[in-house]
Image (cartoon, rainbow, N blue to C red; front, side, top):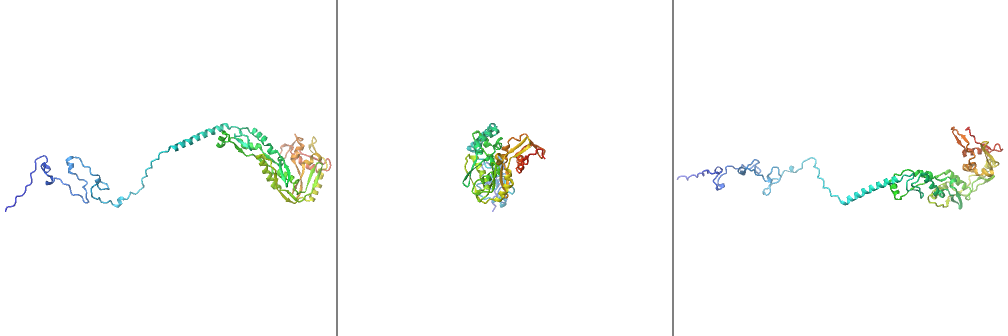
Length: 425
């Protein structure tokens, strides 16, 4: 039998698409393509340099799907095929410093806070204006609004301020202090006891410009500034005044000698209650300050103790014999020269100057310099004494007391003249 006839390949069309594999309208599935895609690379996916037939037809390259872009870690959307998971090291973030975090969005400013800032600024401006006005108006020696013990001395000169304090506080500082010693009422004069409210020192302490904003602004609205007064206490004078007071109060009595007009009187001591002088000094000091501050003249109860006399009867007798009786026996004179000779008699003068003090269990004579100055007054005016340093100075109470002490020991009229040397020898 003869072999079946071999099928012949269809002839190529001479049409416009004949060179591309078929006649128009012919099913392309029956004709093998002239170009074919190369075999896919291992692992799936199209080759990187693949050019589709559509590129040749249209001349426009097809943009690959988003999922197939090089470097994308995600599989194509809707591909239905799971892409291989990236390696673990790919998920590790790169080493090195982290980028700075993005700043948080600023919150919108609140209107209330802005108003508060404006209000504070306005207050600062007003305060500055008020402070400047206060400085301009506060140009006196004593700043406006200054008070001392309730006395307004602000806005005045220093001299006027001193006068106002002296006038307003005179009764508080010069009137006698009332004291009680073991039930006995006594008085102490501040001038004798060394108690002083120094108005001049007080004014000096408050005079001058005040730059404190609180007081400067406050003075514009009637504000006041209380200044502390300067109180001076001469403890030696105060103790002396209290010791003399102790000799006339309490049931205890110290041995001493009293000087009365024309004579000296022996006083023998006895045990009993007596003024505690050391504690009384502090009590009188505090009471004087309180009276100056309040104006209230209350009775000061002074502390007392049971006391034995320090001076024996024998010591009293000795001092009467060696000093008191000779001193009060006759008139004495104190002079710098015959033209300046001051007489002092036992009846009118000497008893005001002389007293006794206890020193180490002994009686020692004491001269009251203030009383002595009152006695001679201006008698030695114009007389100058040449001092050891070469300077020439007026006669002082101490000069008179030294000459008087020598004269009191004299027995004849010539010996009872005390000479004040003026040539410094």
